[in-house]
Image 1 (cartoon, rainbow, N blue to C red):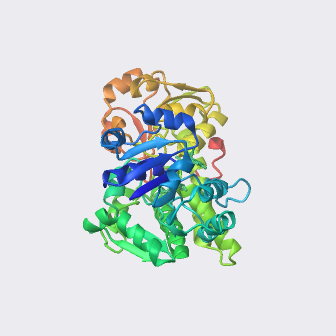
Image 2 (cartoon, rainbow, N blue to C red):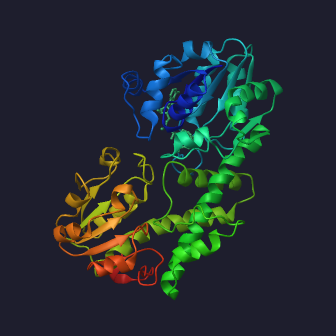
Image 3 (cartoon, rainbow, N blue to C red):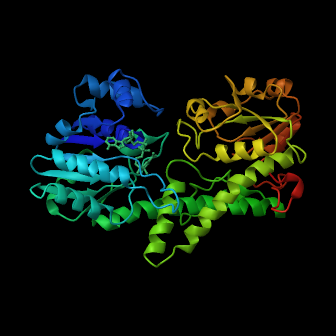
Length: 448
Ligand code: NAD
């Protein structure tokens, strides 16, 4: 199969590379010439474990190439995947579909012979209809099937997720389109990955329902964590106690600073807007969105309380900036709200992240970046673990304490055990543990 990925970001580049690894001929297209130049020079525009080697291998075998020339690539394609961004639209939170529509217009003009156009971007229900309308208006003669194939990969484990997915969802309203998709995913079918064939609208909604459900699970355990702090219980043990129940499952039950990243915040908002427009509001998801927003801000107050009620003129060391480990993605990372909240309270911020510092420079100001965790903690009045990178899981506490001004640790990912840190002379605050009270909304000394 000849496949084109339009958009070579986190999803397009990983999916395209994995399709090439299955044996297909793949061209990854992007209108960012700098990105394509980097890729053609063998360098990665994003950090994703294992990606560089897999790209190099498939380029070497002649199955994967990179180009800014969408028209020639599309003309030779059996299937064209749209994998461009769908960020939140300013104002109402609906998905901004301008990149998808622009890609559809460009693709339409270049189509030759029967081609399947696949939306892999996360798009609201009905977007496939609009993509089809755009293509048919521009090219009434085109032989085309428009299919939905939402992507469920996780950054940081993207290759593994793509090659061994829990399921593949294909929304096709024509048999011809479904047949090409079956051929593309045949290597995974042979691996017995479940493939769900459905209609286009159902496929589009399935992706939002999945993300909203996961965001709800995280938000649920975060609220239980707050309750644990007030009533003297331990959220990690509660999570284990409920997660061992197969009906609940143990994943996405780690209490922390609130969900962030490139998907959950924008996808929950877009689902809320879709449902409001359809006259059937999803009130549960509306609440999840607002609880999560408040939580990110509350985390700054938690740090302030741990610092004795004020961070004015204090130096706070932030360990971890990305929304989760093993990515350089800073989109909607909780660190952004936490750092801004602490700066509003008068704190000086030092930060270290193994991969996220370059992207964070464009998003944050007045932050001093360090070369490692110990340099970051030097002279700090508190260390805050915001992202649970492996580099922060086995810190040398003697060394850490020696460089800090005050031995205060706020562990927003519950990486450490309170007893261990206390034994080493730290004042430790975790999440959802009896001793680590979160500030109440009317905690006036801690307001930021
Ligand atoms: P991204 O911003 O990393 O990549 C999008 C790429 O598309 C950019 O490189 C941009 O230059 C390019 N682009 C935009 N318009 C173009 C055009 N007309 N022609 C060629 N290239 C164009 O975004 P992403 O994180 O890869 O997300 C893409 C989609 O996949 C989104 O809808 C997202 O919600 C969804 N998704 C993302 C993830 C994830 O973990 N990042 C997971 C599942 C689904």
